[in-house]
Length: 187
Image (cartoon, rainbow, N blue to C red; front, top):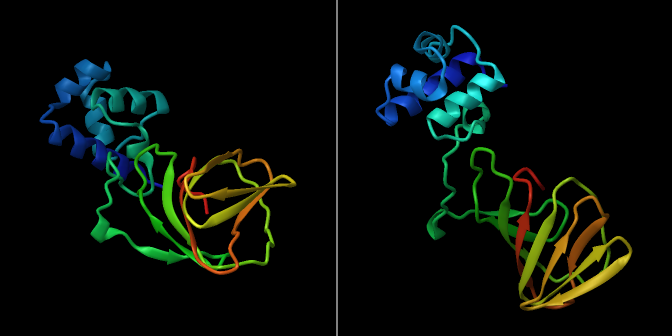
């Protein structure tokens, strides 16, 4: 959990980066400069309403001030900075194409699935919706009790609360897809 001092530090950092005085924030947020100063120094904790008003005055998403990690406003991942991770429950790997942003809700990955051929699904549910575009090979998605085998160029949208999973439909050869999840914490 982020503490009051860190919230205040972030507010002050953004205010100063925008060359704004406490009086500028007071005028835009309709909060006394004294109160803003107390918040910046960690002497008091802002209410949700006050934090939203300060965030609007600073033209910043309120989530920025309370996120565990201090996040950038824009997710830019250069080709050189991409890292490949192994999948936990599948024989394959993924590359994170996006990083988190304050209040962000989308994750993009380039997923490579090794040959499977087993056709075994480990269906699961979660709150986040998913979408995928097959770039290479064939991938079978199981949604509820129905299979959808997608080839290169075909796409699918899945409601996360429905039981679902996917596997490489090829017994020989890798399959790749561009995958999006509507929650940055989705696994």
